[in-house]
Length: 433
Image (cartoon, rainbow, N blue to C red):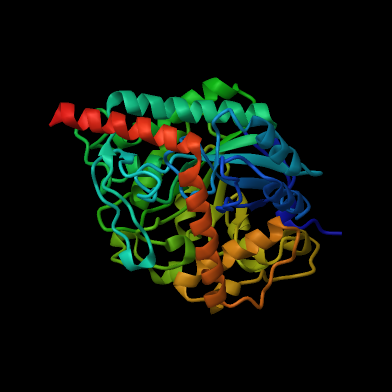
């Protein structure tokens, strides 16, 4: 019997072994409690995915800073919720499955109700569609001390997830979050050690990787998620991505996941809202089903670590083609595992040749809500409701997120932290006025 190409195991540089070439990509779950700790709903969700057939599971964003949340119901690594974090890590265990924690810092990409003075590389506003419900404050350029503290937060977060029992850690350096903000010349206007040239803009990422490696030791897997391109005129380009990977080759990484875009340019769902710059869609790119695989080949040729590509894969033929062409080592799947939580197993068994694509019938502004309501259902032990309309999903999603925001803002611990944070920001602004 011929072995499926995607069933081949993969040995990572640190010695860890992935049982096959399919990974469940990170997706925002929004299932934490009012204290930003993990919950039984998250445990149910990852216990189900542990039996999905994927060789690697990546968690959604586990935030390293409680005042820089991607949404109010993120899990925060703060030391107080360690028991809950350990139960989550255990829930994602399964035969032949590695469960890694994706850790992140949003920087400027945090709702202004949560943080009215977010930190970033520079004071550059996010350029998003305001009528889509986004509300972001102008960020404050980070001081040297704040940069060093953020690096320490990533290292602390990595140590805590290792202690909790996760099998590895992935650093979110894509999609417009803090590390990505340092990498992009659009959001990083600094003229010091941390800005300007690609060497300087990548220094924050490299310092984070080094600090994390010191914290977790040589045998614990470390990956990063990196944009193949920001797909914005004047932003981080694929050419810069290739140059950065040459630098990352000596950083001790075990996995490089390629994605792309951000809230400003949501290429991760296959949409461009503005001019894409030099990496705009070409005929050769449009012919491929996965959004970023056409850019991955150049990276894969020079990368010393395995390369994973996430975004748009739907057919077995497309996945196998990219693997056999040497464009990637691992296929990352996101939304298909919400619509069909067992699709990797079915794919590897030859039962299906195409994954579900329910987003094809949804309006762009309905996609986020629809998939998030399905995650809520899975967390409650239910199957996904594929008949759910986009309009109904968005209505439910808004109600849930509004309640989650209210619960967060009324949390006494959060209120105290925010009070001290905003007092410190005000004092610093007065000192520098």
